[in-house]
Length: 327
Image 1: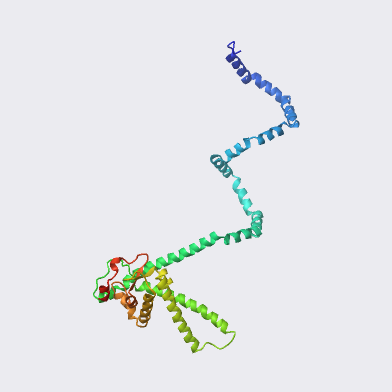
Image 2 (image 1 turned 45 degrees about the vertical axis):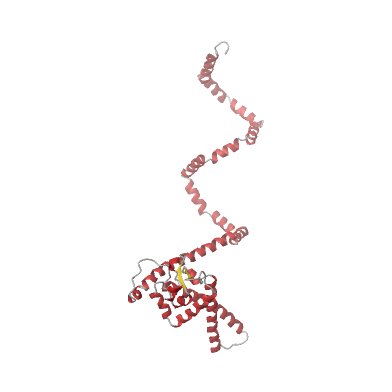
């Protein structure tokens, strides 16, 4: 037909025949006579649909279909279609209000597998590290907030003393720490030492209780006071020498800096301890901080040190020469 040039004409006749009334009448006759039903039954009895399904499952068609369904656009359309159905909300409420959810929850909560999972998570190194970092962060933030407020109080406390000493009021921040910040740091250190001695005395009393029922006398109280002094002295000397700051000073962002030397030696710390005791007995040693331009008390002058705010280090221009220190 293609050689005779009637290919297009034949196609036209075929299309008209399929779409015309003849094809429609033949289709109705097939349906009325039950031909389609008989053919379908023969196909089913012959196992043709099962073989077709097996061939489809063996091919890549299911995977391609699943990939298309799981694609973002199709999944969104399916989700919107499901959620827009009027019966989905009552069905979900009915499931949530039924006893099935409670039974499943109780079964899960009482299972040994859940307890094992929780124990493993709680004992994991990552969780412990996260909790430690969070706790350290809270303590650090608390110390920063208290330090900010006490620094403002440092400036406020020295206004009247500087006026009485006929000194100019400060016009800006200074690197040296004032009386309020140092007092709070000392209070924290006092609490640390007291807590340590309280635990130690409790253990001593517990052990002594097995040997005697007598209450502690004057000798025991004097021994406790001496122990407090010794522990406090060792506490200050150790932290001043090794780290230039006690735990209370670290919490308040304070640090000891030498005025002349490059480091705080043990003898500097020992001289500072002597000045600390003398200043504590005669409180004027600490009041000197309010009148000093560099906020140095008696203990600072004896040890040639200065207490500064962290993280600023004392600039070189604030270091005194031997003649300046002597004058």
